[in-house]
Length: 237
Image 1: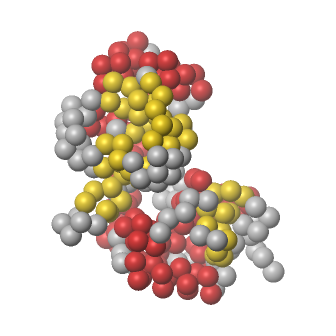
Image 2 (image 1 turned 180 degrees about the vertical axis):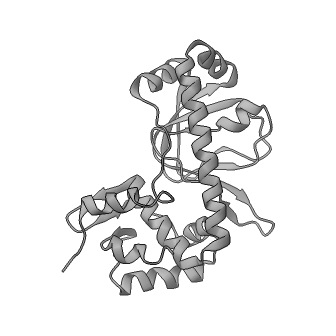
């Protein structure tokens, strides 16, 4: 019998502060201000929105699609840092506000649409609308806490726990609730997942097979569905 329950999945996220994202999202009025001050652009899957070493002279509001933030390791691997940015989120904030060069890359996981706004326009907008400046400050604070949490996970948890937590986070943020579970429609390769949780592709493949055998997850094509969040969460210790 399938033990999935949509409400229970959400309760699981809320009962674990490391799982639930608490980013203060922009409301419709705040998004409209940014749209009016910026320009809408479209990028195809795989496009590099910005790169390490770029001048930080603009910020981005993601309208559709997903973007991963990553750095290059010494052996050329794309190591994901922070979270995948999803629709409604802003990107490129901290370095633009500081006026320093980018240290990370932002790559489109699929086709994306975003609003691009120059640093000058962004600073002007925050000066005119203090509530937007407060929201940005809260967002940066939330991301700092998230970064601290990721460091803790990498240091203290083994690969199975890190992978299980990543799946739960993705289900909470971008999952589609179906009668059978939470379907994660974002199709990532095992190599991409490995770069997100700090392990090897072979380890990810082995662990996903373990989760599948214990009936925590199922595959629907390349998409993963979480069908037993309780069982999956037991790895998060």
